[in-house]
Image 1 (cartoon, rainbow, N blue to C red):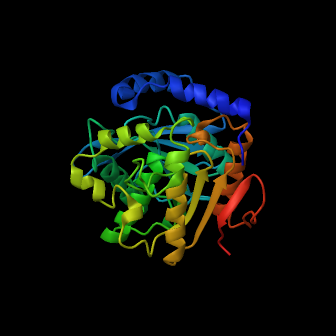
Image 2: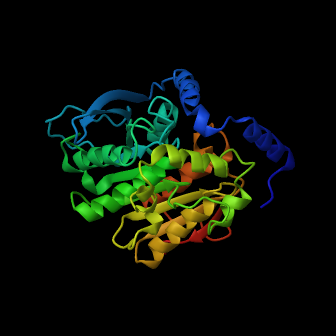
Length: 338
C-alpha cells in the first residue's frame, strides 16, 4: 500500500543523511552506547546479568529480563520449576557489527512484559573484530546451554523460543539449522523479524524488494552489502548456509516458525521466500507482512500501531490463539498455520 507522502519524505531525508556503514560502524556504536544509557528501567521488570561460556573459553555476557509478577530463580544448580509461560532467547540485530544488549534493553524489557515471558538477550561478539562464524557460535553455545539446563535450571526446553530481528533473525535461523545438524538440542519455536537470510543483495538479485526499497527506507542496499563485508571472513563464507539459510539444501525438520516482514524493507522478499520454503518443506510456519513498516521498526516506541500490532501477533502465535485471516489489517497474511 502507498506510504503517506509526508512520512515518506521524512524517511527519505533521514536515509540520505546517514553516513556509509563501511566508514561509520564504530561511530554508530558510540551513538548507540549513549542511547542505551538513556533506557529507563521499568520497575515491573527485574534485570540480571549472567554469562555463558563460549567453546573457546570466552565469557558471553547475557542480560535477563524477568517480569516481576513471575519470579524466576537465576541461581545455577537450584532445582525449581518457575518457567511459567516460557523463556525467549533474544538475538539482537545491527548488521552483526552494531547493536548490543545495552541498546536493545528497552525492547527486551518491553518484550518480557508484553509477552509475559522471561527474555535472555545475548551480547555476542561483533564484527569486524570478530568475523563469521564467531557471532553464530556464541549464540549457539548460549542456546545449547539453555536447552541443557546448565544456564538456567528452570527453563523448560518445550517452552524456549528463539527470537531475533534483522541480523539477529539471521542468527536465529542459523542456530536452528545448526541444532538440526549437530543434534545437541531441538528448538520447538522460532520468531524471525525482518531477517536477512540470503546472500545476494546486488542490483541483479532475485528479490525485487532489494531494488524497490534499497535506497530511501532507512536500510539501504549498500548498507546491507557493507555489513556483510564487515561480517564475512572469506569469499567462501558467502556461499555458506550458516550465513545465508535460504540457500541451505534442505529446510525440513525446523522449528515452528513465525516470520514478520516489513513492506518497505529491502529484506522483505527474502524473508517471505524463506517462510515459503519452510512451508513447502513440511514445517509449521506463519508469515505476515506489516503494511507501512520499514526495517527496524520493532525498536520504535510501543505506542506506534505497527509495534503494538506486532506484539499482538507474536502473542497470538506463542499462545496458540487464532492468527489473523487474509485481508485483516494491518497485516497482509502470506502463509497460514491452518
